[in-house]
Image (cartoon, rainbow over all chains, first blue to last red; front, top):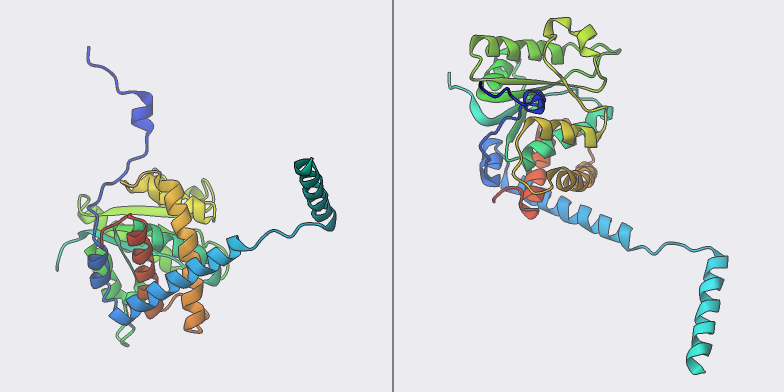
Length: 82
Length: 198
């Protein structure tokens, strides 16, 4: 008796496999000019920089926690001296 | 008339400010998948009406993606109209065309376009992450951990798109030169992250 298709196999969404283009083919097909491509490169660089700055900013701590850190450092230093 | 190109995807989407992030995601994800996105922004208005040229553009794209989430006021008939054109081409030649419909609300299309019943629309719930998921449900991606990688790349593309808009002092992305720049930016990110070859 032929095996029935699995339920999950019949229900899985159909995906289409299309050939992949190279970046140069995508851009030439849309008539992207070299200056537009240059602008795009600059925009990506600027966006990366903006993201890096955002993640590089240290978190502001409350005054209490700053003091707590300071106290811990003092305690640790005192321990180390002993 | 030349046949459809399997690597060309026609985007039929509303050109309003609220849709911009989803448009950026749609264009970007298609570029990350190595597809060539096309939309009516490429069709210039020469005074003789754009209908024939829009039809020619749809005809050259094997796949078309139609956004039907704009159902409120002001009423927009362009998207359902272009879906009709794409469906007519598919009915004539079923093997040559693939038509996909996007919406933001589950089962709404059964009421707004009951003639289309029987086909499942792709529901993005109005979010960029939802849009990436919809496109990955539809197109095969050969990128490891594609959903997370594409979501990260889309975030960078959104920031880059804002930089482009600010550079050109543009109020909207829906202009022909900005569309080309957006695709160029998406391909730069795709090369950088190894999604496609240069």
